[in-house]
Length: 377
Image (cartoon, rainbow, N blue to C red):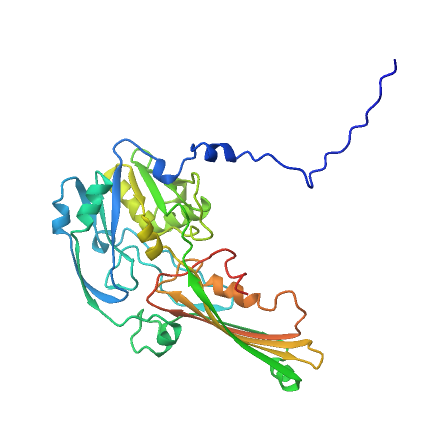
């Protein structure tokens, strides 16, 4: 009996279900997040945060906290001066960016609610929280700037050497915009307000740091979006060569862009591990996450389109004012610039002029969130 020959058919992937390989550990509760890490002799750090949006920091009274059983040490800015450096925001091409990096622990002023001022390290998280509640912050309140309009009108500067509270300036023009508007049959104008939002990932931010004095090696597990940027940023913050730093990203419970920069708390956590020669864990709670994680969006936009009689776009003119918050993280300025450069979208627009201002306010800084400026455009 002859055997029927079957011609193998090429595998067609389109429309076929694919078995996901990453699901079983999550479905079984076997995933490992930062807070799941438990190491011998691990200590826990809790941060004391500013309760007001703007004020002069006169003193940080840490003595009561140091006497709490289980407390190992308390750090303020004076203890980290010269040992930790903030990451300076780069200047994108064609832009002017002020020098206003996020401090690691507040020094002379506090500039937003939730800004870290002191760190308490203890044998247990409970002991650290109890001690942190005893630290008294002596702050003289100042008027808080909460809108970009207030920032432009405020007599007080939020940062020394930053005229007009302007952290970012950028402008670009292509084609003869003025002539296009002068010849337009119709001009359509509109104002847009794109509010801020909090990313609120299911897993809040956190880190575990371990230091090996024998090799001068620092290992940091952190809830971030990649290991390479955190390693480079920690290298600059700690003044340590990047080949002495290993960053491990375990399973991550959401980020949406909000875990792209190393937060100040992670650098302080690493410093405490180096100083104490013990593993140190920091995991924020939901209240801290909402108050201190950098936020997304926050734009006010005035736009105009020049149109011919058939509704064809001849030119675009726009002015973007971004609420950048109290400090500049490395990518804070890049987000509104991305919006600015994508305003023309996929349309054939012969001429366009866009001006962008990024203002300092007494709010948590902003950063990438779900598209990093593209959805806004």
